[in-house]
Length: 299
Image (cartoon, rainbow, N blue to C red; front, side):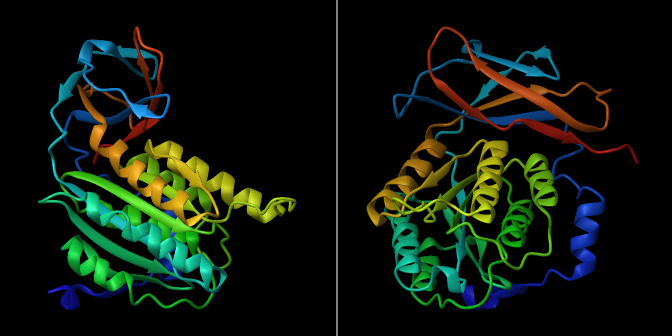
């Protein structure tokens, strides 16, 4: 039952410090195969029908032979991370909830969902293997109040995604202004680099015409853009409810149409961060993919 899974994600200072001081363990780190989700978009539409031979993948500059994994029908796990702070009270939270609701008609049999809300605290209301119907019901009861622990919430969503075996999508809904996080941007981005989860940010903090963003708003928007890009996702910005709904549906459609490539990791791969480059041969299109993977130190 959903009620049994409700929990408060506690992020004590010691946990935050540990997250910044050392990289968390990587799920599947003992497996010598690297999987890369790749989105190929041309003029706003996904490009279908590509074969493995059309992709060029370089690992720290070295070309890798890749295989294409059939993933189009693989069920998805979607974790909604919803800003419920004071700054999104009123119309903004209604727009965010409305946008989140637009996800559910496009989910398929076998897909699972979860819901995490955040203000000064990060709360897991439904774990990532919950029924979409139950999660949709929980959305209707979200209450706002308090500061915004945006970085803590992003870290918690990525951490929760580690337990999922399968394709994982995080949809982070926010106005983008962090006021109360313990964790640094670097700690969150490090977690994103080590994760195979794709993050799309649905951002309702787009500036009103004629008003310039503050320095803090610019910094937070840049962080969200980096977070999405590192994971192979996108930052979608608008103050219009219809645009936000369209962004959710397009993010899900992109995830459905993504190619999953895999290659064998060299057995002597050095510990640490490995930079990946994914290019497409013979077709003009935008390629979105994670920018690297992490090899843990030998034990």
